[in-house]
Image (tube, rainbow, N blue to C red; front, side, top):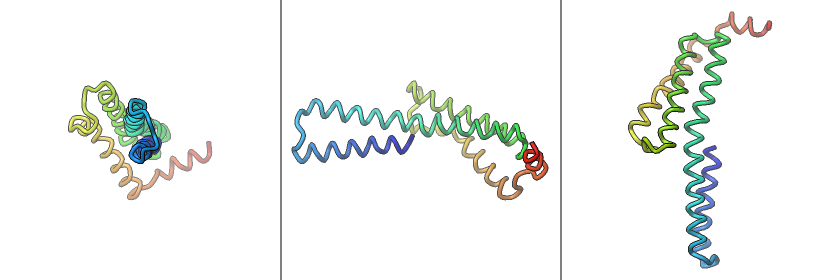
Length: 138
């Protein structure tokens, strides 16, 4: 999603280069295209880091919770933090908080703590061998 939004900004850059070179006419049409590309970037930037991150984190945390290959408390914490990221995205979408505001950062901060905790857990402890063996048999 973020890469798609970056393409929108590159399109805006190309549009401005062509306008400056004088090869495009119709300033009102160019303004409309520019606003469209900016809106495209804003929506993909909002949907990618907020909703897709939240959905992805919730799904893999749920799978980790169900399989038990990491401590259930850690996986449950991941599901809770995923919901917080989605809530932060909704607050941004309805313009209750600004995209780069402190409030949004504080709401979404627990997911960073979760992801770092999960990484440390996997590096230090790894997956539970008993649960991995049980998964292989099923």
